[in-house]
Image (cartoon, rainbow, N blue to C red; front, side, top):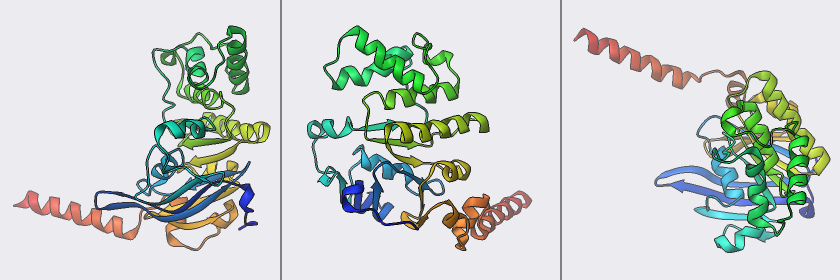
Length: 273
């Protein structure tokens, strides 16, 4: 399971985090901390609350109950103005990249820089863009528009934008979704590179166990809004919990299979009437 991080190593802490949408409980009392300079991977089936969890970290969502802390400061109760300084220390890589289609690659990357800093010197901005693009192997694409990029290239540019302000934390939402295995592995390598070279704390949501095993210092599995298991890749792979093994192997549960069979039997029965 690894050594429990000291309090001063915990960059982000969730305490009793609960989120309800109407009568549906998506997160149910999650208590979790994220260690400085480490990569924590959040896995679990669709709908288990992975993306909802990381949106609370950057306070794009606010909890129904519980608290969110960044460097020992509670942030879930801050107003939007107060959150600005916190959010500049966090980068967010959205699932689809979320680049501005009407902006060039250059304009996409300098957007957060212009929004949150006083840097206006063209040479300095050029250098920031060049450095960040070089880091993801995309220097030379400054004048391209997102429509002319492949899915993998868009995600690399989105990562360059996410690190434009030199954040302490990067949140990745399904970073390898929609990519073939080779391009997915490029993203994995870039996540490892940003962690190693920039000392970034990475929090990655994924359902890709190959990716989770490669990049994760720790893996946390959610199930029905709760933490089912956490540990390193070996701990997850060797778990005897049936929910964990079904997720790893991509197997449907007997209950879900039975419900499908009942549905098909109902259809056949209706057709005979």
